[in-house]
Length: 87
Image (cartoon, rainbow, N blue to C red; front, side):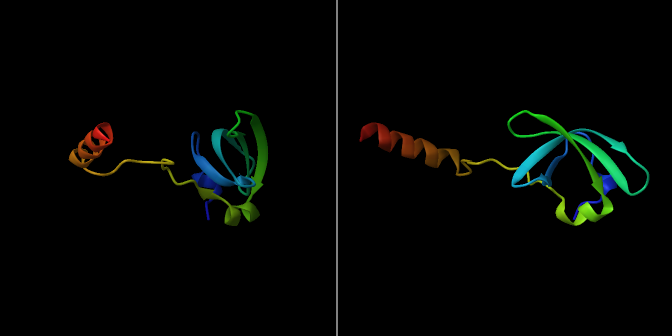
């Protein structure tokens, strides 16, 4: 659950667009119980949506991560690269 007050510029948010992480461009408070967010989708489109307190339960900060990573020691990578070269 993400509170409306925690939504800031450049935050990556789940739950605004179904099945998609969006990046917040800017926000405008609309009273104490609503917030207009301007956001960019993964394909680059800029959209806006008004969020209410009832929306908080479906919102969450997206986890920063990479789709792949090489976290092994460098020596093991060199060994594997050399074995691949010899093969």
